[in-house]
Length: 128
Length: 362
Ligand SMILES: [Zn+2]
Image 1 (tube, chains in turn blue, red):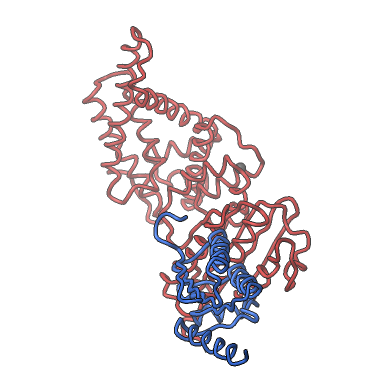
Image 2: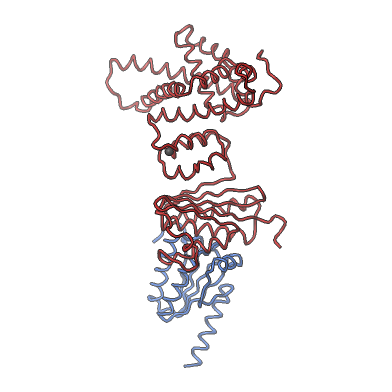
């Protein structure tokens, strides 16, 4: 994989994968991140994905689209994705750009993301 | 020094008069080393030309030390050359000294390039330049001779020097420029005339012309380093990140803050990506503006195929390549001013500006 400090880390916590982006990613790195994460969803049979983007100072059209497509692929594989940590300025620029996270749920930070996922799971188990 | 100076003589000629004032000292230094050698006066003249060519780069007060270092180099080169000529007569190529051999070649090429460059000036240009720089004649007296003004003569001298530098570099390359525009562009760069550079669209020409791109390095290296303008070459994904970081850093250094920084960086990211995807190579220039108010201007240029229908490319959702249609209209919304010029077969230039409200947003 990468030499040097990791650009992204993906950690497993039960059936949840927590992916943290540590620094600005260029388009190729973004695509590699997508592949790595999607592969791990299958490997670990993850049910929840949290992507922490607090370290990103720019989420442009390519990054937004990649994040959305990760969420779409994860959904098709039975996992729910939550994007956490979008900085207020970044969110503002995304709105101006005409990009948003679409149907993908977002949360303030990692803690809220985890809480969101466990709430969903609670709903899911109470229904069957 | 006894050169009379008219009161209205332009400031600029002070430096040139100083160059002329170096002559006696240089003659002394040369004479001390080589006596009444026939090449003595040539060495002095060549040193003067080198000092002259480098004048803009020399710090105030450093002219004399610079000239002394230069005359020593000029003499040492001649020395080494004579020495090597003598040795090489009874020796075949010695691969252990490639650098020195190269040095000598470079030095003699430089010398003939200076001669050639001088030859390419018009008689009038050469005459005035030498009268002023070598004989130390003041612009005022040169002006009286021709019924001109000291300011006009000073301006002419400045142009001549700029042209000398251009012709010197061309002579050094042993080449004629490939297009009609080259000399105009090189002159605009050499004279550090930013308005003229814009008029001849120098930045775009440098993208398209390899020769001028190469020559622009020494020409641009002359003037004071401008820290209010950055050029980021764009050819691959990492350059997109580099361009937007450069824009953000410049804005931060200028004291800007807040959401505007992110909007600026995001817009730069979009236009830089367009270059990578559609044109493969180009550049992004980030410039700090002070007039009419503080702001950042970003110009993204490429030499790609151009956009056939600019209006359509600015429509939301229009996409020619993997859904990238959001790039341009998105960037336009993020910036305060946005302009795009595209010529099929020649490339695209996107210029956009973000104004920063220093009195706080409201
Ligand atoms: Zn050219």
